[in-house]
Image 1 (cartoon, rainbow, N blue to C red):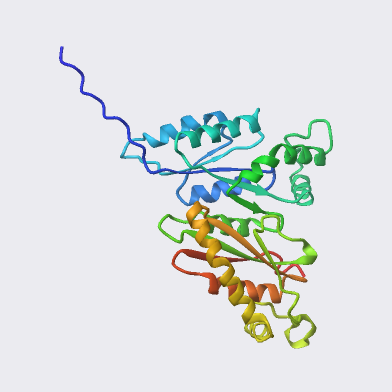
Image 2 (image 1 turned 60 degrees about the vertical axis):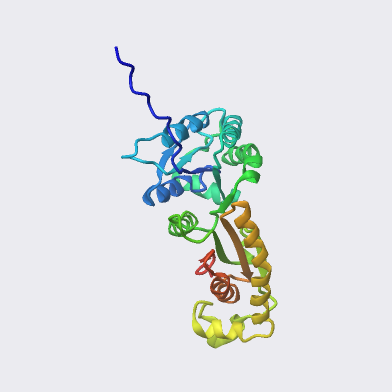
Length: 300
């Protein structure tokens, strides 16, 4: 009887792997939907111990149905979440994979509002208060958040802003090697939790006190021109560009693909908005893509 034809050894398909996790109520479902709409193969509520089998299956998929971009949404709905996820991530790295861990976060106050609005209990609430469940989850995920390559604070973001941010971070391959989010914000609403760099624009005169500029924002030409005409404004842009040049080069070497620069003023309407827009232009290059998120614009 003739020997069966030898089967070729499966070769690993080029595979980009993203693990989406974070606080319950912080927007994991929205993040997964954005990735799915962008062509990723998304598995929601995946038990952590199935991460390795999932990547093995994807890497040996038939050539007619290749899977090259896969995302798994993993969270505390799976029992033994923390221990199994850390163990699975370690095993993936040992096998040569480089999973990107995305952690979605929000303030306790924002999470309480969201759970109360949908009238659902927190997965870890048990017989205690809603806030008790949030505190337990935050303690459980503390080390995981520290290990994440991407942390996104959704406290002040609506669904459309989060969608834009996720779409920019995980755009099609072949684009910029690093993507910088320029986020304007108002200090009176709190500093963004996911900021890698924070710059304070309150050293510049406030257009709020100029009646003819008060009702405009930093996206409008009169305010933008006023801000950039102030002493120190052009120099500030130049210094930030100089600062970020070696930083972005280092990120590219280390494989980090995303960074958030938060630019704040008092209310997040005039100075920070104008500066975020100007920095987005100044920092953009072939290797560095930029996009702008105005977190607090419209809150006043």
